[in-house]
Length: 192
Image: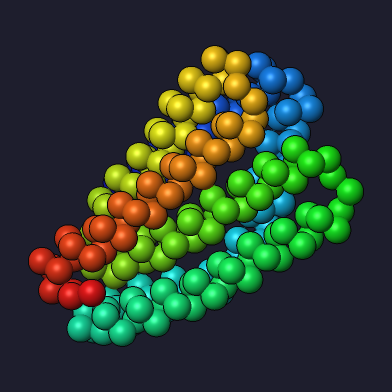
């Protein structure tokens, strides 16, 4: 129930921001926003490769494996993240898009890299059956993006600054997720 509420709340917040972008900045800027997300998330699947499901299954079966799985998975995630970001940069540069569109894609691409690490942490939360951590981080990220994104939008900033808010929100989500995994889960019997 907690995850469902968090997902619905974050989707509604992101929808509100997208509608505001479309109305305030117009079709061209909204098109850049939508393209950057669609293009970047097309590569996001490569950052997962079933690793998250493996983590949930194996750590839930034996919580003593968390240390090995956590660090090995982190190495794999890092290698995949570097590969995916390089792939995004190379692919967008092979296409003839304006420089501001490319910049937005770079920023959103970096955000999905941090998001992939956060989703990795979510898998660990699920293995320990602590979905409230995931729900909290999910809603917090959506709130940061929506509140600061809408504020910048109302103050007249461009889509690039709003994309930077997305990146910053995902970096915060990553750092908090790492903190929770490293500290809070120790008390639950999983020392990382």
